[in-house]
Image (tube, rainbow, N blue to C red; front, side, top):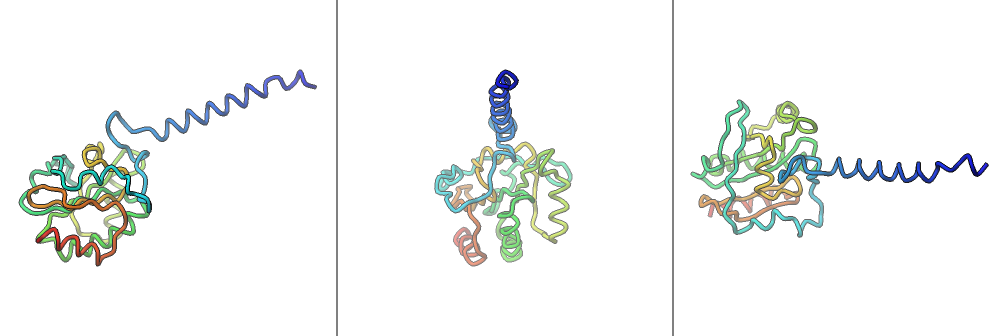
Length: 195
């Protein structure tokens, strides 16, 4: 009977190796230096170690984004007003909770602040079509762009989404929000950005 089960330890080792390889494959960045949707998590309550927070007080890195009609735009083209930059994805529950508040703020401050919503587009989980459909279904009117290769996410050190950057007219990152914020707090942050 014992001779018939000689292969069981090899099977167990094979399963462990397979699971390890699968885990490493699905949690890797999409390409060297870029953060893929598979490696970005949703905001949590313990975000004090979030690398995006290190940009507070720093100069906003210049990044490129794609418009809905396929035109490549540089962030420097929006330096005439303060900016609110938001990295988001339609599949993210925290983003789904935050975007209605962003819409409220856009309706209130959209003429004084550039709202730059960067959709973390990729060919699989967050396609441009999914983002467009989500925006249309929700009736959002704020401007949004595609961060197709997550180049902006990489420069902005995005670890969790939504990540929100309040940027002065002089391109200094005044504050970084990596947790959900209320309409009252968001309005206060935007007022301070304008002062």
